[in-house]
Length: 281
Image (cartoon, rainbow, N blue to C red; front, side, top):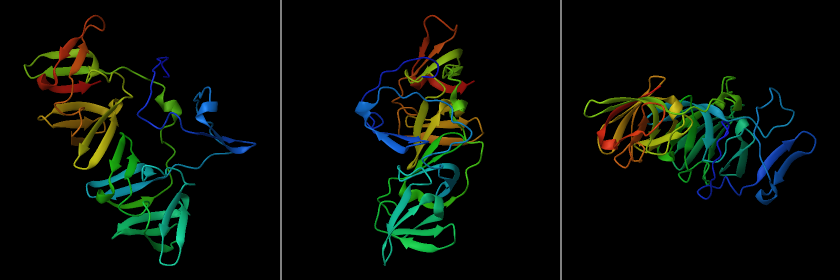
């Protein structure tokens, strides 16, 4: 990690064992098998790149719960302007780069697609444009929201603003800290380990609002208030409130919290059922 901590990981993801793609200035796109990779070291992106894989897909997604604006990952897969949207018309098959699209709107068994030039197409027949779509992920200012196809209405694409977070914005890896109030009225303040495993601000809290899944870094969370066995109310630092359920992070399956009240020594353990509220610094 950027703070020097080392973590050994295995299984559970195709992030390990996948090909590594590099855009070399002179040689162009190069792909390396995982077995040929010794080390990948990340660094800040230069202000200008001569060669790149593409720009992020950005826009506003309308769904039955409201609308969200941010970086878009379409069908859990396409995320760059050079990636293509596949579909079929009555006359032919289509593969259109996302950078050339203005909007996509769910319509019957397919989608109405409008290009940047204003051409309108009705596409169907692939998981990019019908109910086989895995969902649309929107990375917002506070975290990631995964919207299933059945909740999706329309996306309108736009140019990404310059203030989107870059690699350099994630340099401050801090431990969780704050105040826990118990149902007995006791107040404990200090470093916190949440659910007995999350201890850094970059780690994620997951939960669902109906069928929409939220994946929120703890750095964006101001307060967590358990409401019942299945739900917790989450207040974000931007003022947004959302009631989340169905995951161990926000339900009775949570293993509880540890609070290091003196900054060192043995922590105090609080079972989830005894937590009234947690406020993070």
